[in-house]
Image 1 (cartoon, helix red, strand yellow):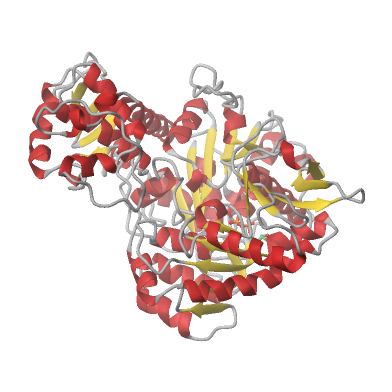
Image 2 (spheres, rainbow, N blue to C red; image 1 turned 135 degrees about the horizontal axis):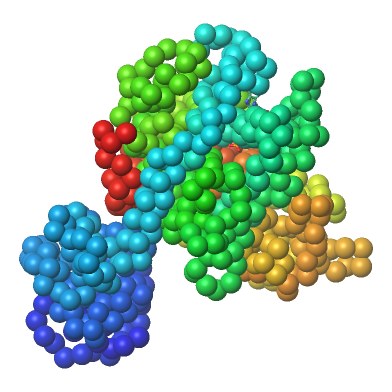
Length: 638
Ligand SMILES: Nc1ncnc2c1ncn2[C@@H]1O[C@H](COP(=O)(O)OP(=O)(O)OP(=O)(O)O)[C@@H](O)[C@H]1O
């Protein structure tokens, strides 16, 4: 790192350059000066960018703006909102001088009413009070442009009569026969448009809907003697892709019970694989440029992406870029879930602007009797493209986990607390998450984890891992996943007489930390180390065609996984989940995080959290600054 990154950049008055200093540990004492405090909150990358700007003629304030725009991306925003810069990162005096400094800089493009196609594109872009690194501005504008193009055209009409109640595909709800069947409406929206989002919590029937939609598309083509559509199934992670494929296969199998359905005729045209988005787009090397893009679009007529809430802005922009204008892009996901770890919360933003199941007058007319009641017309361009499924088909309607998820989504602390303290069998609440409570929890968990050390059959051991897990909000600290993993390992080592420090032992569960195309192991894949008959350790993973065994040394980066963070659990479900929130406040404690964690549990949920931490968590929303929704369409444009 260049030395000029320090005092020189972040002091308001010129000071001599200082030598580079090591990164500040989290518990370091308060910084001596406000400037040093501002700097301490920034990463080396942020500071390197500021340094680059400085070397290219930026004054201190503009250089600082570079660092802050980079900091904003690391926080998950796509840009820096100038009116929301934390005081800890820029003094009020500097904030009030910032706009003028940016306007005067050769490194900053100002986009306003006066800009046009000849306006040069510079490394920083200021638009409507949002300051972007140029690349993120390009991702955002490109994505908005592509989605707007896809939304503007209507595909060739497909007969939607088959979707109507009574026609076999989507049966009316036996308990409520006059209610709108939103699954049928979701299929209708996807038939009518080139871009559709089907949002829904776990088990609300997104895959069920998709399988029926594919059936309609394939059967329509076959009956017209057209070529059936070329379909791609994809997801952000390998694990999510594998789950998606399994759900689609199960969905086809279930539909096989319908005597009018010629399963084989349709099945032939449904893909036999689901890929990661990286693979789909040809992003497997070190390059950030996808092999498939506007100039070389994907060959598919229908691209369906599951777990779309986990897709970040750069990936979504690349995906939309690679979709042909005459193809369909269908995103499946849960609008209320945590967004991607990286920048942007694309799915949530698209859905927030669409509202919940509100259509334009035009779409209501086209839907006809699929909609049981007329609704107040929406006028946002996105409205017709988003359908939200709200009834879980996997749980019964009054499952406590489902009710808690609804209360959390509504930010209703009182209802959430009432459910937690009512003494339900499937929801157990421990109002303490201090060191003593965590130690007791570790003891209890160790009993369960001992089953893995005693396991001999990899299939059974992997099934055991899928049954239950512990989810944490944070990695470190007393309630962090690392502490729980270390605590359980230590107790197991004592009980089974191995050294806790030894990396590999019989029964160690691991989670892969990054995609590795060489081994075909992906970020989030979970495996178990077991000794074979010769006493050799192998790590077993589930694969498309049965179990796969690896030498421990062949694995990509991985962690022990008795417990994992909620972020890492996205896209997975377990019969039983223990959810642990720290008893001190951290900014990651948000409603979206809690919702995502609790909806990983299918049957049983235990929550360890102090009441006030819980209240704080349910109340706080993830706020990500972005201009995407504004760009896609202004209200009234449709
Ligand atoms: N309308 C329906 N009638 C009967 N069963 C249904 C219906 N919709 C969904 N199901 C069943 O509910 C279960 C969950 O559906 P599905 O897997 O499609 O949900 P999902 O939203 O894709 O779930 P996940 O979030 O886990 O991916 C499946 O067993 C499916 O067959």
